[in-house]
Each structure stands twice: as structure tokens, then as C-alpha cells.
Image 1 (tube, rainbow, N blue to C red):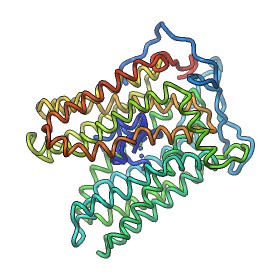
Image 2 (image 1 turned 90 degrees about the horizontal axis):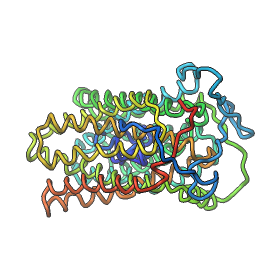
Image 3 (image 1 turned 180 degrees about the horizontal axis):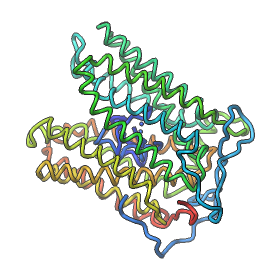
Image 4 (image 1 turned 135 degrees about the vertical axis):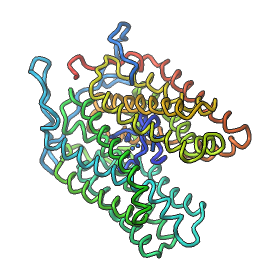
Length: 503
């Protein structure tokens, strides 16, 4: 699932939790990798990625044979080696249950490079999230409509081109594609910074650079989704995803906190320049990954897209959770982007109260990612889906006009549980989907999870005007709960199990 990248980062995990855009920049989901994992953080401001513990329990239903429609178990993916180029791809060593403890991920050079790149990149995105709006509004002749147009030019290619990004990411070195994406980010945000600093910022030029930034996100997100299985042993997928989220969520909180000071102290242009610099540093770090791509038969882009869809549609658990995420992300985006600020302005004391509420969720995502490093569950999808229930709680409390501190507590819990969802979702995707199609399948996850978010943002205001903000918020909470209950009706969601040796 995915969060709106700002409603722009996202996948099944997205809707619940972080607002970093996919370039970040994301998963992070997103988000680390998946939209579902990413949208989880939308209201907090995460690329798409829970305490209900799962339950070694009874009732597992026999899974269909690997590779058949609806199968929950897929043959182990082939993983990329350390050298660049194309050829047979040695994967990370697989450790059997009796082989002794796994080495620390912090001793793995490529994981440390990836973690550092994502952490620095998302820090820059934290600056940009605040700076871009103030930069546009500070220019001569600026209007809210002009800001909306620039943001729309960034968001549209992220949604439209995400499937293309998935096809490309499965055809070439994912680390090379991530570097290209980062370089596009340098060009886009560097250009925006230069225009703002010089005071010469034609609307057409700003929109074109926003399109470049959105394209970078569409290329980066699917590539990132497939990287972890290429550098980390399968038994450490969950820990790796959670550690990536700890770094990204922590740096997003820091970036958001420092962005206001930077914009006030030296101006929005310099804050945008810092984001461009973060892309440049990220590209340099990712260069050290040098991931390969496996040799495969030549095929057309349409054939690759069709194959990705077949892999996506053949797994009931996958499309069921993405459908859940689509509803959740739309509800979260509507609350975070329109309904929450409206309610805060009218009844909670204004921007200060809303800032505290959003900050509480951001802190919750850090706690959730830290918790996800340690939890071990037998049925990860069941736990992940149940973890979405707390996401509805802040919406319901806003509708009830509860005290700000109560809403803050609920938002903290929402951030925590949604990031646990994101980590479990990404891990399940990486374990169950063959590595050679993972980016394409992930792109369908991103696309489906984000599909309803623009509509939610578009209709939230008119619905609030027609029936009242409280009723609209209650509707968002109800939709989230109903979508989650619907996902739990799937036998595969309830019974898909993690390998006994994992963790």
C-alpha cells in the first residue's frame, strides 16, 4: 500500500503511516519500500509501509501449490550480487536454522550504504515538504491555486508513471535506476532552489521541474522495493525493513522540525537547496551498492506489464490488502490534508494544535519501526491488517472533538501501528514475490494504494461543506474500519505464515 506522497509516499503500508515521498525521499512506505507501507504515515507527513500479536495458533489453511493462482508461497527469489552488470546473480547467503546466529546488519557494507542513503535523503525531504509551499507562496503574484498546480504537477507523474517505473526496475540494475532518480531529484530541487533564490520563477518552469521531481519518485519507489532482497538474507528481511524505517522516520521528524527554522532563518530557497544536496549524497552512497540484474528473455514493455499484473492478481492476499489500502489511504489523505486542519482551525485552537497532533503521529512511526525490529509473528498479514484498526481512532476522536491530548495519544498509537503494518507488509512482499518481478508487483501495489487518494482530497472539502466536518471525519473512520474488516474475510490474509526459521 502507499501513502500519498504528501500525499505523495505510498502502498498497502502507505496509507497507514509516513509522509515521505517515494523519492525520498518515500514507503515509505514509505515508507522503505512499499506504498502500502508508505501511506501509513500520511497524516504524519512518509514512501506505503502492529501490536496485535500474531499468533502462533491454529487454523492454518493449506496454501495452494507454489506458482498457482492465489498461491501464498512462492519459490525463493534470486538475489543480486555485488558486482555491476548482467549475469548470473549470486544472492545473500541463506542461513539455515541450525547454522548459528546471523551476522549484524550493521556489519553489512551494502545495508549500511542503503540505510545511510535513505536516512539522508528523507532528511532532505523533510526540509522540502515545508519549504516548497512557502517558496511558491512567497513569490510575486503567488496564489493558493498556483501552489495547487505545482503540487499537482509533482503528484500526477508519480501516479501515472509508477507502473512504468516497475517495468524498468525489473529490467536494469535497481541501484543504477535509484541513482538516476536521485540525479533527477538534484536537477529538480536544485532548479527550484535557484529560481526561488533569484526571485525569477516562471510558473511554467516551476511546473516542469515539479514534473521532473514526480518522475524521479515514480522511478525510485519500485526500484527501492526490490533492493532489500538483493542485499539481505531472507531471515533478516523484517529486521532490515524495520531498521530502514527507524532511520527514515527519525530523519523525517528531524527534517520537519528543522525546516521551519531554516525557512525562517535563511529562506525557503536554501531549504530546497539542502534537499537537492541530500539527493546528491544519496546517489553517491547508492553507487556503492552496484546491484546486478539477472539475465532474462527479451520481452516488450507491455508483456512485462502484463506479467506483473498476472503475478499481482494471482495472489488473493496481495490484491485484497491493496484494496484495503486504497480506501485507507484516501481516508488518511482526506483527514491529513483537509478535514483535520479544518477541524483544528474551527474547534481545537488552530495550527498549533494540529502541529502537535501531526508531531505525535510522527513520533509514533519512529516507535513503531523500532518495535518492528523486535517482534516475531507467525501470521504477519493477519497482524499487519489488524494493525490498521488504530488508524481510524484519531479520525473518530476528531469527529467527537476530544481534547487535543487525547487525539495526540491516538495519533501516536496510529503512527506506531501503521509502521508495524508497513514493516510486516514489505517483508511479506519480499518473501513471497519472486525477486525478478518484485518491482513490477510493487508498482501495482503503489498504484492501487494511491489510486483513490486524489479523489479523496478532491471531495473532502465539498463533503465537509455539505454534511459538516465531523460527519465527514466519522465517515473516514468508518470506511477505514469497514475496509479492514473486509480484508480480514480473506482466508489467505488470515492464514499466510512466516517461515519457521525467520527471525
